[in-house]
Length: 163
Picture 1: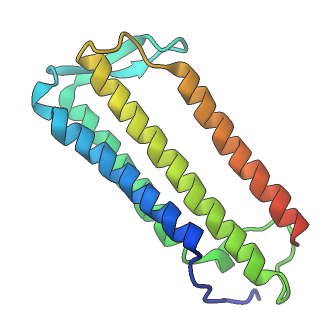
Picture 2 (picture 1 turned 90 degrees about the vertical axis):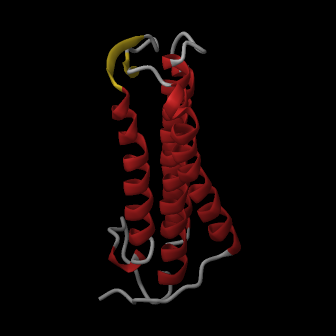
Picture 3 (picture 1 turned 90 degrees about the horizontal axis):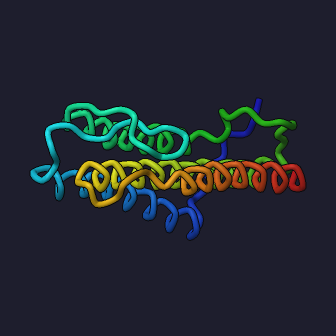
């Protein structure tokens, strides 16, 4: 059985948690600020080039903060149980603390990346619906995928080296 250690959050984890919370608040703020200015139909789906190919009632934009709250809540709860995660190598008394710290850091990093992505898509959908921007900046979405992949890759390398 894996050790169930109570490891205090590091300064970097606390800073990252604040960034995650701010990203969540931004999604809520974007909608609150622009709600009365949004048209009855908003852009909700985009093709591979970023052009709008789907519209829906403006209430649909409320799914973004719901998704943000869900991601924030689930990943925050999960971060309290690193001893329950699946690891690619054996967790021992000797490596448990470091492996748990790295895994918890991965969870908060992914949380930030997901929340920033949701905030960006919310902002973009609002701006496109208000005819401020003609289309979604798809390059930013590909960049987000690259960042998430890099985060996971960096974690795997560091966790492997610290096994």
